[in-house]
Length: 173
Image (cartoon, rainbow, N blue to C red; front, side, top):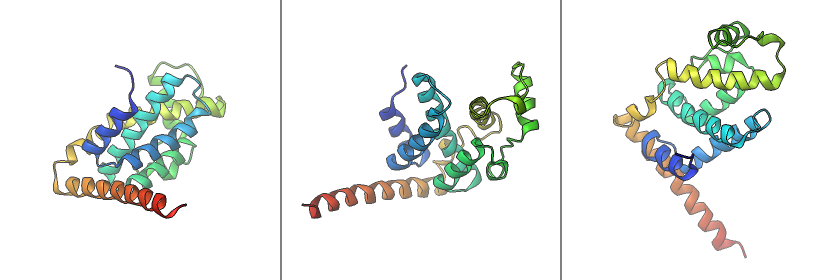
C-alpha cells in the first residue's frame, strides 16, 4: 500500500516506544536533510520512514535515547563516521566503497558529489540496520520490562506535549 504517516505514527507509538512527537521530529529532521538530495517525493517518503524506524531499532539495540540516536544517524549520514560508529554502523569511505561494489554499482565513492554520497550513505544505513540484527529490535524489546518503560516514557512525553499545547491555548489571548 501507499505510505501513510498516520499509520506509521500509530505503529511507532504502539510498537517502538516512540511518541507521536518523537516520530514526527525524527521524520521531519530526516526529511529536511534528505530533501536536499532526494527529489522524488515517493522515494523521500520511503527513506524518511525507513530511517525513522531504523532510529527506533538502533535506539533500542544500543540503549541510546531516540533523540541521541537521531542526532548520531544524521551526523553519520553527513559523513561524521565517529558519531554513527557508536551505533555499530561504519560509514568510512572504504566501507561505503565495499557496499557500492557489493550492490553492483560501478562508481568510486570518493569521486561522487556530496548529494550522491549522501544518497548512498542513506541506503547503506538502511541496509546495515536490516543486516546487523537491529531491524525489528525495538518491536521485540517492547514486550520486555525495559520496553514497557520506554512505551510509558513515550506516552508521558506525548501527554506533556498535549497538556502544554492546551495550557498555551488557555493562557494565550
